[in-house]
Length: 85
Picture 1 (cartoon, rainbow, N blue to C red):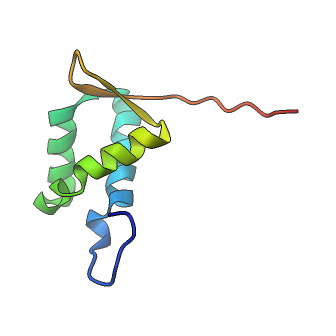
Picture 2: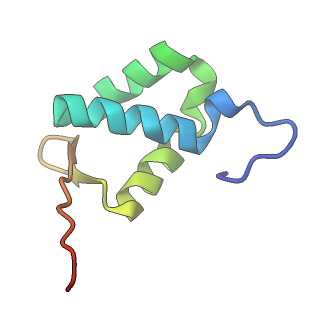
């Protein structure tokens, strides 16, 4: 769930988890699914596991990460923006 309500702990929100995932994938460039999950759970706690798949989907839909099935890992997409004249 991206839109929080008054009972939502923002530490476990999709946007917060997505930002942590993006930082990790940017620094590692490629990271395995299990290693990424373990790092997120270590940093935020066990409750982050609930929104972890939603955060991955969010980043995938934005085009920030890609999934590599052969290695079961995620890769950071460097998107170079061009200015249209």
